[in-house]
Image (tube, rainbow, N blue to C red; front, side):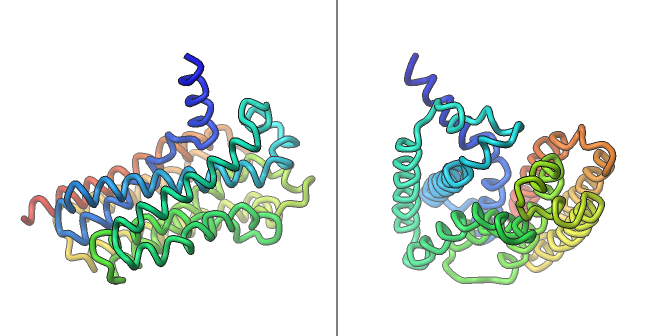
Length: 287
């Protein structure tokens, strides 16, 4: 029972359930590169790599932000703050997940192996961005934006227009919902001198940036499907995703952030899965 309790605490630290944001986009890249099922081997190493790098990024963020999390009332229950996990264990976990990620990239192809340190570096760099720039939300977006690129390069190590468009779309999609999420901490961030956009520019401006980011992301998802040669199944799904994105912004306002978690997790998880299913079914229909 002790093992399962410790495993549960670890999963809580890295928020394993949030993998639903990145994994579907990695599969989008892989399926498009293969024009269908990318093969069991590619799916296994890609999944392991994505889980490893996301776990690395979350654990590194918790370790780097430990001093901040101790002071923020919203984050005082995190396992590193409460002592449920030690800093020594967390550092070991960071090293192991980084090694697993690099090993998985080596099993893909040489290009993925060469790019793996850059992916780890960007994933770690994000944790420090809110200390000096209000563009930190877009750096986080770039970290998750690597998912469709990783999926594509795993199958076909060539940079293509659809992969780049999905990278840009996911970057803005993630930045948009992270801006919504950051509005919860606006008072704390100001007191602590952190550079979140809500703290530096105000909640109304942050919400405006979030809306603009999601509008452009919705357009980019449509353009990516066009560049990839997708058709009648994908485009209605991508259009519906655009409607869902706009619906997020009806749930929150500068005067009412009580439903931000619904916008952040539930609706964005649906978006990632919907787009992947749209790609997969469209490719299956065309086969």
